[in-house]
Image (cartoon, rainbow over all chains, first blue to last red; front, side, top):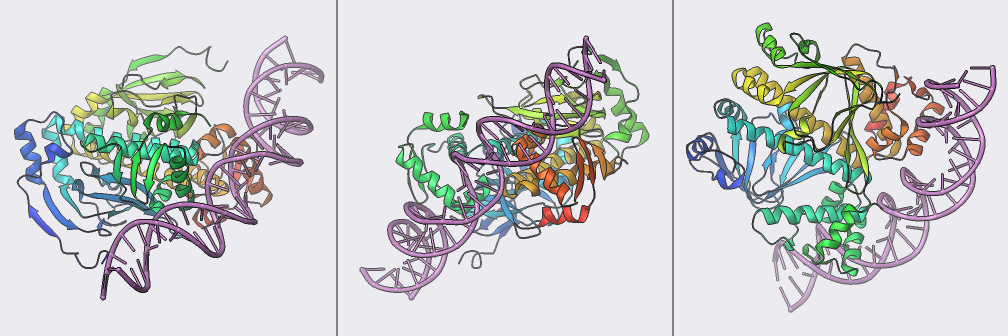
Length: 241
Length: 241
DNA sequence: TGACTGGTTTGATATATGTCAAAATTCATG
DNA sequence: CATGAATTTTGACATATATCAAACCAGTCA
């Protein structure tokens, strides 16, 4: 019952997607915020394994994640596939597709999720009238670029344990930003998915977890993680091998 | 005479940066194009090794490369450093900085170069009036995101020779787009810089070059490269190891 | 021209991570 | 609670790439 059963989906004109609390907390007045809400649609009922969009789908909208989390993955012709990101509540997904009008990756729900659909044409029109919205949109795109470059650094010059430490700290930070515990959480993704994201094999990820555990940096049992020694993890990431 | 001598720089109000031929060939009327030209400034006299901007510099502008080429590199606190991209004539540089108002990487000239400076505030203002400019700006940013994700795939799941093949084919393609020979060119970067970009050591890059040469895929002598067997190079990139 | 300098190539060896396989654990289901 | 499937952990071994070191080469400057 991964994704077959609950594939129904409700799409409703939505007078309040509560975007303010989610993704656009920047410099918009209440009235302006309302205008953004007015062009957005709530979409619910995504179950684990459901696709938000697929590679090559026509690009229509960005999505603000209201609940749950997704992964994005690119598939190479030859079957090679790689997770390019994990997106959680409060984050924007779909930016890749603007340049070609078609999506360049799959977005898959990792748990029961809801999104706000933001039709991009309307967003562009609106952002011509609202400079602060325009600016915010630019910042979101730029942030994605910077994020990707951080991952390039990670993939290009860090060793396995440094990568995992960076990954865990990044998760921790994003949880903290949402007011959740930054040191104790449940992973939504498998070792295989983590490995794909970090450019490692799942066994290597598992070993790195075990090493951290043995050295008292974390507690880990399957997908339950507790970060015990944040300074040590930070040191790992910042340290030349 | 790497970068000490010719550090003077001329900055002129520029009535025709010829952006049309370079970076903005999309859907703008002559009059609209003129408006973009009016806000841009030509900056010349960058010699090999000169910085266009440095990490943490205040963000002011994007730059359209009119002549020459640059590399961008991020520096980790600990001295670890990685090349995140090579930009050539006709490409836009500086997108990383929008989200924080400060640059997140260094941009260094790889040869004698000129750029058009595009003050970002003015670009934003203008793009509120010109929908096709707005759209184009969005596409440029999105393209950068897609490009980065391609590199993530490369770094995360390709072997050394596949990476180098992908790199050479990418160069080839970009040269072709400018009407230059896609099979015979002069590299502007060292083995070390290529390695940094591809997540490899310079010796590994050198060996991969030699292997390609031995197998008749390319001719290479120092920085002069000739691609002999494009199909074989493509097959390398698309093939599962 | 010759000698310097930095970049490149090549070789020998070390090591981190991948691969393959089996055991252990967790999770879902009846 | 018991069963089975999927995931995770652990082990032994293989391999691609890194590391260290030396020779080679190309471009620059006297």
